[in-house]
Image 1 (cartoon, rainbow, N blue to C red):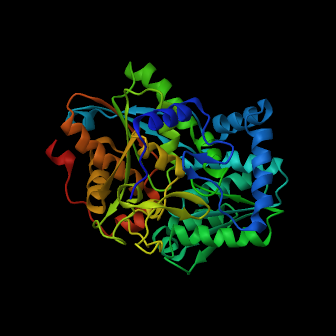
Image 2: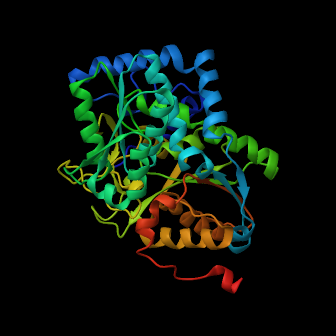
Length: 418
């Protein structure tokens, strides 16, 4: 059963979100969010919340952060017109190229911001979790940049399917801890990181990788990732001559999607569409389509929409993409679905693979398997809405996915028939 609001409640909550007054003082996005954590972690969360209030929007912190984004991350990232996709799909297609950011994905925007914040609040070491490995790589790089030791927890399944990123983390100086418990993917990695944090909350900073978890993390990650949508909006006006009719992003925990969508919420004429992992089917355990098929519940410190059975047991997930393989979603996404501002759909493994292949062959871009889900549904939408202008958040590059992709040889050659 989904959370629903009447029209007035939905309007009030959406207006509050656009105005930047959510989360509220309790860390809530409407009914979602909050803080459900062990007593031993409360001081760490309170210290983080105080640090955010003191530093995040201060002139000196923002100057340091923006300097790193420009000189080290490589921002602004490009907005790329995709002429051959546009011709094939019958739409005007634009891509926001987070794959061109340092370390190859949007994750670095958040990692360097949190690493700078950790230094300011006196952390002695950083721990992180990762699924696809991109947040682990970004955290390792950011920790090297600010001079803090880094330990990354990663599910054993993901260690195997994301071997190139594991090697990158090691080379960047991080310790990688394979997690053999639970589903051995992202949820298990987060559980292990939280367990370590409980043992040393005073000196350890948990650098969370997505817009999930207990308050203030969903807010913090959104603020750091909103640079994506801020840039994309300005670039669309400058390069495309207007805003898009629709914007698409893949959704796992939801950091790249909230980063793209949040600055566009007030442009109500833009249709916003988040694409989750449809896996191999609609049954529990066959997908990671949390918002499409989940129900309200608490997972890893936050009340949101999660994948659970009738008894409230959190279910294992499946996706060909490690970064979308998660049983929950950020609480702000749960709200945006409930107030009908963002539509959330799913694309399956096969659809994502076909979309990745088409993008490679038509535009010369090897995107991440996560991002390929957004392309899959964007194509379907474009063909049903001919002549529209669309924006796709290209959240990361696909080099990391080669161990998986080599199991699926290319099925077509678009250039051969072009």
